[in-house]
Image (cartoon, rainbow over all chains, first blue to last red):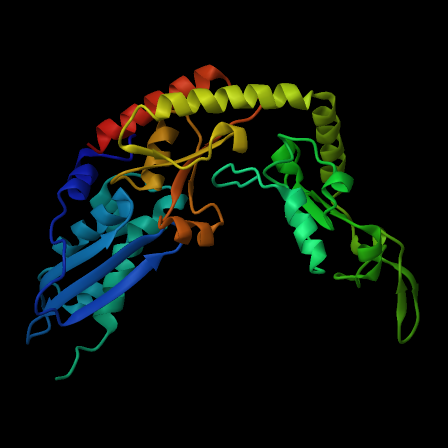
Length: 125
Length: 235
């Protein structure tokens, strides 16, 4: 099966929720030193602790960028605690392709970054 | 020879300059060992190392050459069987070279396999190897330079070993390698363990084809098809 399915290529070429997010309450950045992939995740969490809006930004391979974009859609509407519980398998499911060991880091970079962002207490003003 | 760009380094010049200021020279010959004859006396290097799997031998075994006087000065780095002459209660005398540096049970099968790989390579004609590889490199450059999205990062063939590093605008080298892989073309992608050079080139990574005695012109035609597929897929 081809790793570059229509859906991955579509998210890579026309990413959803890409770019800095205005009014973000949480953000984090992660790198994949092996590939040079970079991902930033922005979360805007409302008073009741729910993620209202999630964005990503970054550069890298199609797998890392597409999976981060897909993840932002999944994050919206979840609480921070629920975001922490997203399993790696959920990401593989979104991508819908077998992920070889060499590409696991690419696929999970968005999730790792999102969990890091969700862990950081919001900035107090 | 650079494993990233193929650049053939003028080792003798470097060795002369280094020795003038009292520095020692260690050559990593892993990339060049299968492509050119190594003459450590002529290079006048102090140390030279390469691994067996780069010359069609087994993994997990390699060569470290060192000038005898330097090796004699150096203390053992690993203790174990076969590296001692005498052990006393408070000190010891290490064994003669090379045993001093070969503690413990050696990788016997690996070393024997390595010797056959060296015999194989020694029977080949290096001029013929280089002519063949140069032909492949020139052909690959002529094919890949037709595509304006493709940037070749290799010095002119006269100064280069059979290595062709390239990038494609908007496509990460790992994605390039993955598509090539799906066409049964095995290339390397990444920073090739040379992050300082990547920093200098302002690139996260490159895709790299490297050619050897077993490659053919047809292989490069197949690689060009993989390139076309890559460009089409990410258009």
